[in-house]
Image (cartoon, rainbow, N blue to C red; front, side):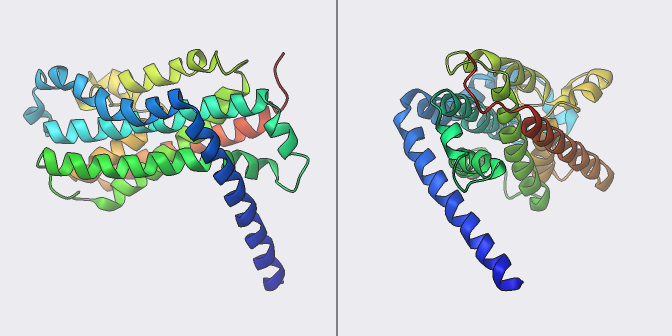
Amino acid sequence: MSGTALSIGNGAARRLGALARAELTLLGRNKGVVLTALVVPLTLPFTARQAIDRLELEKLGLSVGTVMLPAAVGFTFLFAVYASLVNAYVARREELVLKRLRTGELSDPEILTGTALPALALGLAQALLLCAGCTALLHLGPPKAPHLALLGLVAGLVTSAALAALTASFTRSAESAQVTALPVVFASMLGSGIMFPTEAMPDRLADICELLPLSPAIRLVRGGWTGHLSAYEALGATATALAWAVVAVFAARRWFRWEPRR
């Protein structure tokens, strides 16, 4: 049994690797998506610097660094992973790539996962680079709770990919993918602590915003550097992130469209 299971696992890994390499090639050919995924997360956080400087961060127990770093990571979730994957899923569906893949050995979860792997790898690499850059340039120092920061990164990447598959399920074309992705992008930018920390919001509004899909991941990343999250708060953020990931994965598997939407 163990040999059979190992053989099945190796076969799945080979199939996922082959699909991920093919998707990486296709991703590299889409210059617009690559530019958005690479440049936007690097530049947008600095556009919010003036707004951040107006906040009384010391009273909130924050600094410019502990606001800018989660913002940079959040933009990576939104543009390097979420927005690029919405475009990828829809484009591959409309080009009948996904339909052809389903006739082979790949299962549906393997197809969705393999398609997402290059964007997830890019997002992880970019997030780690931004964390290192912000830590050095903004004099943050190492994270006080690195396990929370790592958990936040993983939660954000998984949730972003699952939300992308769900968004793609009701997106009609690659051209409209930029429009259907906007609600999640704007809601996350304004309410998930990316542009403005939830600590600076009124309590009732902050409680609502902390329930948005990417809010737990941003909260965990920030808490990883500040060390201000209690065990109860960290557990709550983790549970919320897990709930969103499970719901998004279930909904994507339930409603994902494999045929072109004519």
